[in-house]
Length: 94
Image 1 (cartoon, one colour):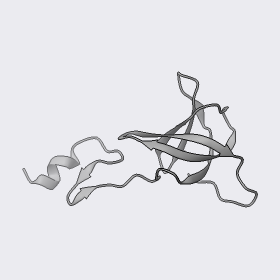
Image 2 (image 1 turned 90 degrees about the horizontal axis):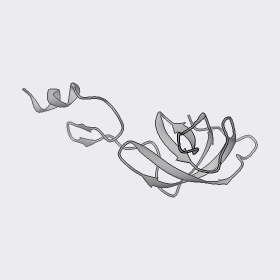
Image 3 (image 1 turned 90 degrees about the vertical axis):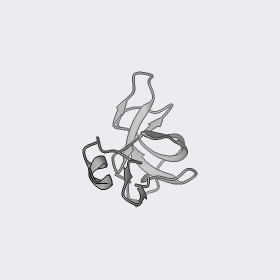
Image 4 (image 1 turned 120 degrees about the horizontal axis):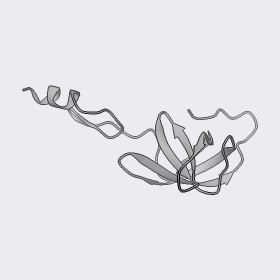
């Protein structure tokens, strides 16, 4: 079995290995993003997504539009803190 084909059969996701390395995450630690909290986790944290990557944001409510700063990135999700409300006229990350 070729090396490239071995990874094609695995589940997709962020950070999965492909020929030549890993796929980068769509967010970076320390950067700010305008997001909408789509739902709440079982622990009560808000869940937002940036290009499909789940981001947990504490102290938020569903449907709330917030500006977040990414504090941690793991293999399957990221964590962030609220830094304010989105600026008028700025585009929301999706």
